[in-house]
Structures are given as C-alpha cells and as structure tokens.
Length: 434
Image (tube, rainbow, N blue to C red):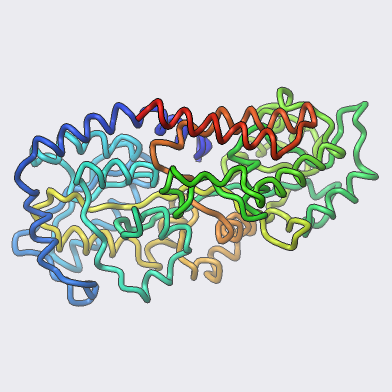
C-alpha cells in the first residue's frame, strides 16, 4: 500500500455528510425499485454457488482501482468468461470513489454491475439502496473468512460484500538488536532496561501514542470499544468504560520506556528513528516496508505483543471488498462473478499480484503465505483485529480521542477523567451534526 489505510478512512469519513446527503436525495427520488433488486429479492435464503447460473445474454461491467488490483480482476474476468461464457469489462475507477460515482451512474443504468470499495463506504451504499445483499455465501463459507472481514463487509448484521483484502498494523522490530520478536509487552519493558538511552534519543519501543488508530489496540485489548453493536451503534460509546480505562492505564505506564510527548511522536518521526536504528521496535502497517528498502539491518514483523492481562491487542483493520450494484440487469451473473473472484484460490492469486492480505482463514496455511513471513505476521494480527467503525459518527471521534490520549500521556492526567471528557465531547458533536 502506498498510503496508510487510516488516512484514507479518515478522509472518507470527513466527507460522509455531503455524500449521505446526495445518497439520500437519490434514494428519495427513485420511486421505482432497481430492476436488479427485484430480481435479487426473488431468491429466498442462501444461494448455492454451484447452482447459481448467469442470466441469458448477461454481460458485466466491473470497477476497480488502477494498479495491480485492476490487473488481477482483468485476469479473473478472462477466466470467468471462459468458464461461464459471460463477457466482463473491467474499468479503472478508484475504489474510494465508486459509491459516490454509483449514486448517479446506478439509477441512470451506467454503473458497474460489480464494484470495489473499502468497507467504510458500505453504510452509505446501503442507505442509498445501491448494493444487493450477498446471499451467495452460506454459513459454511462465512466461516472460511476472518470474522473481521465478514464484519467489515456487513451492515447491521446483514452480509453485503465479498471480501478481497484486509489490512492492519503490527510490530516491526530490528533483528540486529532484538533478534527475536517480543511475545509480550513486558518483554519490551524488560528489553528497554538495557537498550534505552533517552539522552541520545534511543528507545526500545515507539508508536504514535496520540493517534487513536494505533493506541486503540491497548484499549480494545482490555475490552474497550468505540461504538457498540460491532461499530454500528453510535449511542453506545465504549471509550470510557471500565475496560477502556484499564487499557489506557497500561498504555500510560509505558511512558516510563518512551519519555517523549505526543507532539514528537508522529509517523514520520517514528519511521526515521526506526530507519536509523534508534528505535528497536515500532507499530506500523504494511506500507512502512516501502520505507525500509535501504536500511542496513534486517527487520522482522510480528503480531502485536500480548498485554499484561494475557490478551491480544485488538488492532483496527480495513477491509476491501467487491459489491453487487442493486441496479444491475444481471444480478445472478454479478453475484457469481464476485463470488468467483473471492474464492480462496483466486484470493491467493490476488495476494501474489497485489501483496494485499487475503482475508480467508486458509490463507495462513497456504505455502505462498508461509514464504512471506512478514505478510503472515500481518495476517496473524488481522485475526485479532476489528474493522474501523464506518458510520458517519466516527468522524466526531478522532479529535476528542486524540486530545484525551495526549492529556493522559503528556500531563499524566487520570485516564478515567480524560476519557469521560472525550466521550462527552463526542456525544455533543454527534448531536450537533444530526
């Protein structure tokens, strides 16, 4: 990836209000249900993939971002046409723009039958009536994907998407000074006793403390959460519950090995420390690897270390998936293509071409994945991740949460007090933006 997922996610959430407005207008003026939706609703229950047949004369248009992802879908399209006799045209449309583009192109009959989108766009698509439910995968097949991937492409408990990739962050470590990945955070604390040299700006462990995206893993590892009901209930904010406070207290204790204020802990600074060998371990995502091609040491990637409570830190994850346009004339063919493109063997081909992590549980045991230890580590952490909430209210969370993290870290303020204050600010912001 060339850009951290959370950056794209935050930008998307910031423009959600205007997009929802446009979606609402579209949905409201369209008095006739989409033809594809009518056809889709005729199918009761779960469709067996082997029994799903494309409509006579079906031909499909698919949207995907330019790059290796597009190349992958073009290759899949050729295979699909050979197997099912359905021609597929694949066009370059940025995944982050597909739902917005579909709000006008869908009702006009110009939209793609199948489109790629990050999971934060699903709520908008569902609200605007732009996407058909995924009734192809039965419960057995749901179990073949990571829970976080299924959760990411679902809305209010209903499955819509076909997961193609998952990403999250993990622990990078410098093997020249830390030969083995730490199993627990207490291992890092012990290592810091001999490695740390604050006067020379040398630290055992660094992460972007004041950024909720990374620090969330500490809160969630103790049972905290942002929104209830798998991130969909904005009325239930869990950032100041007893579990989040406990996680924040442990996070705060780590300042003993990282005596640096949050203003001096942004991603660029931390990357520089790691590149120079002055940080033995850092938290970051797969995108960091492109900045480490010329370092003079060997590095490794490992899942985030266990917390003192014995639990895995729960990182935020981002899910990319394929979705079927509710206005498609060929819902059966479109669903068949989306399911075909995301079966396990094809997901591994996608990984080979894009290096984006495949969300199937079987991926960890695939020989191709075992050859890439770093990718396998990210995938292992992805098992202990949760999709970043994609509802519009998430846009009101970042600033208050960041302020709270800075206060408890820089000024040693009581985590319960600052987190309660953050939640009150979030609640006020949600009310005023409705």
